[in-house]
Figure 1 (cartoon, rainbow, N blue to C red):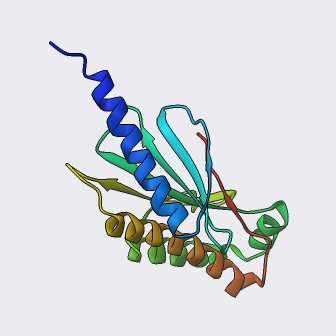
Figure 2: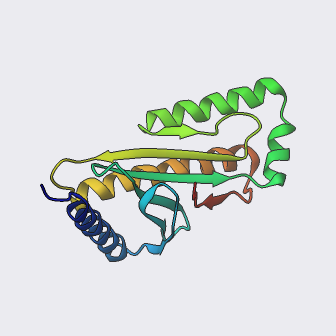
Length: 167
């Protein structure tokens, strides 16, 4: 019986190299970071400074995770706290529904807001095309933009920042 470890290592390395090439070819800035529970983890930044984490979790050889986040500064949080509760709740519900309409999962759209994350899992069996990967990446990037635009349209040009998550 052969040891399955070398095959899985070569597969994860091939997948990492392929995704890295696609991102570089499309002008993304990349940083490979260690993250617990992952085979590899990229922090990818687009030309608009939107950040998306791209990772392969240990034991999930058929699944690439894409996650983008927006972090609220203490000043941004105070702006939201100043709203009457009914307005704040309406704002949060609108944001939740709009993220769902994009076909994304989310975390953190609860009060008090600190970090809002949108994510999508990419599953594959036998192959991953650049088109599929880049479409899903664009969807997560649009989710980050949607969150930023919701805040900017309600509060003006706040100092919302993209965030790289390393958990």
